[in-house]
Image 1 (tube, one colour):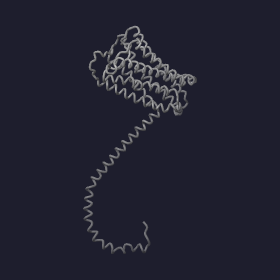
Image 2 (cartoon, rainbow, N blue to C red):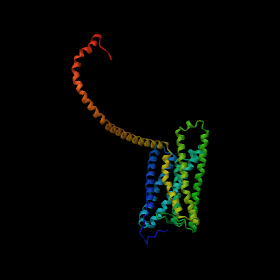
Image 3 (cartoon, rainbow, N blue to C red):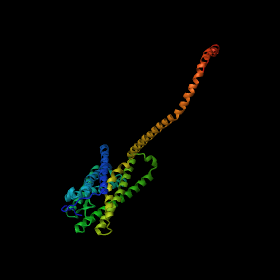
Image 4 (cartoon, one colour):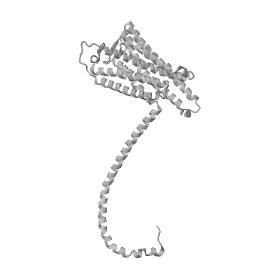
Length: 371
């Protein structure tokens, strides 16, 4: 729909959509900020290409949370007109397309980096350098800017979808609009095909490497090989999640443009899956790092130990209180018996004193007795 504020009506807040938007924006911002902080500390010590790519992906994802999710969240609460109207919708549409396109290109670069590392290991140091990767990242950003600004220049148009999100109009069947939609679909399917191909080759090469190893258990302890496997696993899983999240929206865009299998609920679900990719990406970084998993496991064990010690202390206090309660009755009986036994002691004290000489006399004759 087009944003028209001339006949403005009262905006109705949808609690479910607004709450999910708050969760996505806050959770994505915090998680990606943590990844950026961790990599920022490590990248100074080890300035390698995989960390640069992960850092670039985290930067685009946190940009998506700040400049894409937050405007959509505000729109859910106050509506388009109070959130800037058509100019804000244009900005939102540009940022949405630019950041997500850049994120998709970076994921493909990660897959290509693993492909070169495993298939062309002797050429890796010459092809994949920090300078070359930085130039390619800059080229991806320029391409994303061009692709995102085209709807503002007459190629397609920016409209509002689902009451809060602004991006291209998949119902635009004009010549330029159709060109843009088909370009988007071809770009999406091409990225997905590249990821699938690179993942298949990487997995195959990893299996060949394991078969060539004479002692797989000993080789797994090599730090360099461990890092290589960790980043490969991270890249493969990130690519699979990217494919699962991106494919539905690409298919729905093509279906809506062609006018077949139209379903607004499926469109909304595919859009949510598309933006969820930015939420999942930062958590894959620590899930596939042995050091991070070890620290998390140690934290869980500390929490479990604290809980167990607290339960043990409560049980000890409970046992003490119960034993004190049960011991009160025997104390009373013991006190009574002690009172009755006091009289015989008084009567026998004199006899004990009189017999002391007789008791200790054998000791003086036979010498001191040792225990």
